[in-house]
Image 1 (cartoon, rainbow, N blue to C red):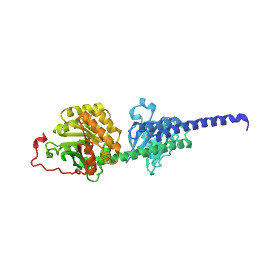
Image 2: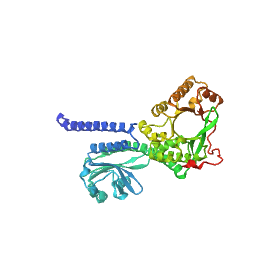
Image 3: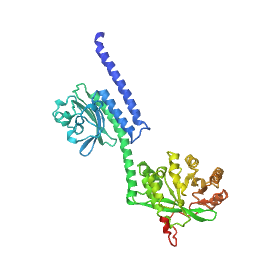
Image 4: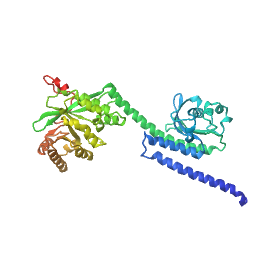
Length: 443
């Protein structure tokens, strides 16, 4: 072969190498995005990822429009559409995210069931494609599409693209490119669908509890460990029914699905309803997250009861977005006698920050501190420091999780005057009966 005849081959190889390098860069960028742990699984990050995939396919295959559809019972649902030039097209003549079309009217369905080939260079050459209303309405002159398959073998939908002009250059290589992107999208859709399934399960479990009122309240006594008199109770939620699980799990799941405030308010309302059965000098302690405490519904709810007999507990695990906002929301209640407690003190750094930022009336020692007092000098030192702190700030310490006489003795020696735990009284759904309930406490 003469050297002069090599020029077209060299040019073709150079073009092919540039194409492959470009594809490699795009696939590398997309793959990195797909496996990124920083992407918001349910939010805009997910949508941006799919849009980026569609834009890459559109650019590399020279298409006018690319899209991802989902196969539903009777329709194809178009969740993601890349059509930069479509903004100037009348709505009836463009494909938009959120559109639904009947199966038989779509390329997606007909390609998926084998009525149309995956690669159509000229739609006018295939009678079924030529006769589809979408061909005229969307000006589809060439079309390419492959299934998006999930790991369990199910077909989620289709990844497709089309051009407004016939394109005889589309080939098997382009189909292979489309399949690569469709596989990556399918893998990420698996993650998305699993997450949605988890969210749906959590939401169903929380709604079952709320709708069936499968929530009971148990009351654990808080005792003056010097006089051994019960001075108040902590209200603890208990769940029943087929969706029953531990309170910490269900409240966390309620937070994940945006129902935490609703569930907490339901629990608090049930707890406060028992206040008339307490002795007049006893208080009732309820647990609430910062998002609930700053809500107007919480203020309206607790204002129906004697505020000076209510203690509000914020836990170590509660995330406080703004201490200023939380303090401002609690200020009118605290001026009328409501006391603030920081729960689980000593369990982690957050509780100490809550103490310094919120200036609570009560600091509740985490049970892990109480149970190691007889063997851990650093825990005893921490308790002494917290007792000294509350003396300076006119508060007091309540020790949780007291189960042994030895723990009770050490707490007394350290200057702790109040506590709760199995040694002093287990949580119970019943309260000691008063001779005659003071009905004025309902006001």
